[in-house]
Image (cartoon, rainbow over all chains, first blue to last red; front, side, top):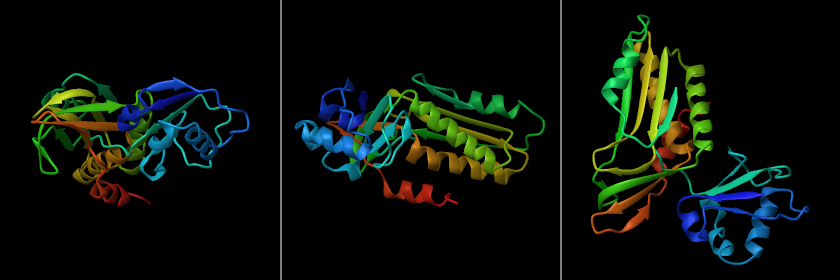
Length: 83
Length: 150
């Protein structure tokens, strides 16, 4: 699964994009975030406060209980500040 | 129409193009967002806009479609830049055109309010001292977007 990071999450994780092999039993966004944090740093710190992070699954804003089965691309980013 | 680009745009030329595109248009409203020299008490030297290619276009298209469904618009243009910008440069342009002014006025305000809270752009500020920092979300922007919820 392709994982993307933007803004301060990109700098904290240390990459803009990575491919992660997610185990089959991880089927929701909530479970994915927990699983990523359990892998240790830099994920543990970067994803510690999910209230400060927005997630998009296949380029659509997503809630934590969303199914990620079949998803191609998941992006983590801070609240947007364009305009 | 939505355009995401790195290059500077010509606000006057874009307004002119829309103003002359149809004789049904009686009102044209535009908003231009510029790089200013201060934010939260710091002197700003430049701004770098990061975005999420692909999702940015999708979100802007959704915002334009929502505006067109709510107001009677003859034209609707959003141009948003990314990359590094200097003081005074334009960042974003919204132009709306309608038969009567209320549609164009309200749609332009709506487009900016929704864009600021939904379109995946992030501002990195560089101060005059060379420090860098990511701009934080503003509660006033969230309040502004909330007033359009139905």
